Length: 397
Image (cartoon, rainbow, N blue to C red; front, side):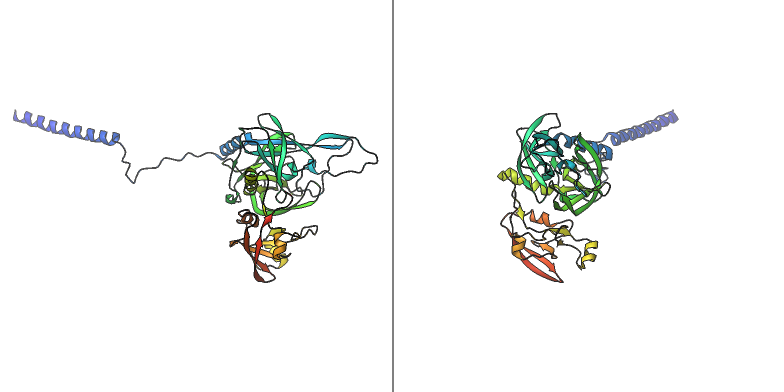
């Protein structure tokens, strides 16, 4: 009898121990997590594939991309355009060269070209290139992504940066998201959207940012050389008709305005930094016209080849230099002319900021207003001199 009692007692103890283990295990399994524990594993971030990021960026931007048709009164049976040699813009529709007919020709209004733009204000402001929408004698028709069309008026231009602002009579329009071109890096994705060849609306091409701070000389709509500085280079295909369209990053932010392609190479396109465009847009929104501070020099950013060819011992700066057809390096009557800046000078600092690829001369000037007086450091034939300059409004706005 005593042995039976001992067996039951031991069995009860075992069952109690087993019950405690089960309850403990259940508590461990279902107890709420300790939010103060340092060993808490963070959730795995959701990643988006490169392909899906591109699709999302295009969907975000495309509704605000427009096609622009340019119309002008021209002579019937006369050529309305001609492709110029070494045409950086490669937009033959815009290269209009007047002819001299032997008899008085019949005049007729015709579509002479097309380009692209993007909506920057829901009330109808559209940014594009000056060589697309800057002709005061032309008329413009804007075609929205949803199929609607509107006549457009020219609000103003920034001829030094090949920018024009058009206006259509519409409201509640989709707009692009403007990024910060100071943050872009060589090698990051670049998506170009535009009205390719004037026939393929909202064509999308993709590449990378190939270079920053480029300076190029291009033909304007009269075949005259035009120097563009602080330009983004990309290998995303920029075809005729793409001019004025957006260059977009993977987040769907516009970081540049597609402007030109080098017809002598392959996949060498150029875009105006969006921060330059934003300055023009803000000016129009505040004053109704384009007002930009102006220095009045032609320049090219220093690079190793220039340093060697010009025998310049410094690495960074903006070399003041005449144009390829001997256009003056310093514009007569400009602030730079008044300050005594010369051809061959290298502007190394402006307003205490060093001139370099990540902080170019136009970027620093764009941070100022008309009438501001700022100090510059200039390298001139082996010595550094200090120059004070008072900015004026850019002419021919």
